[in-house]
Image (cartoon, rainbow, N blue to C red):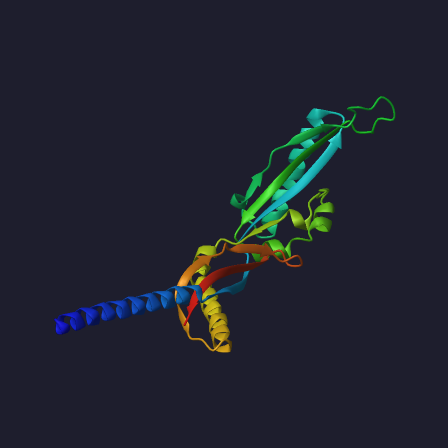
Amino acid sequence: MFEKRFFSAAVVALGIALAGLFVYFGICRVSDKDRAVTVKGLSTRDVRADYVVWPLKFAVSGNDLRTLYADMSRVEQTAREFFMEKGFRETEMTLGNASIDDNWSGYYDRRPENRYTLHTSLIISTADVDRVIANQGCQSALLSKGVILNSYTWDTDYQYNGLNDLKPQMIEEATKNARAVAQKFADDAQCSLGSIRRASQGQFTVETDNNQPWVKHVRVVTTVDYYLR
């Protein structure tokens, strides 16, 4: 009878000890889950535009619409020939939409000399970015041919289309930078760096250099949570 009671008590004691041990390890696991660090990794690139849309805006004024449209046709043809001499292909040029202003609208006295102003544009779309850059200051040369250019450098749209090729290596670099930051934090905290708990990739941003609009600044930031042991 004594042996049975002793065995039963031993079993109960062992069960209580095991239960306590399981609780202890459970608390440790919960505690470990809360030990984490959130870091960010940055990757940047400076790239050159690979395509450009260059709108060249013209305007002519007069009082006779028929004469006005004839003048605009002459201006547009002169501009085409000028840029073809500069090495641009005719297939890279398209004529924009025309619009007309009635300068006398709203005036009852002291009306402007010319009633109408006709606006249009010749749009150059090309991958030859260097040629566009070299000809940005062509206003004087066109003026000598009787063509007044109303365009500005900020009208030119420099584009970069190679972002998809950059994404894999930039994401890899940003992730490595994030891990380096996390490792430094773990070393300073006298911990060991664990596995990734959660990671998110930020959006890629492409910004234009204010002084050189054909240069693009590409950046991406990744956010990673690491466990600390």
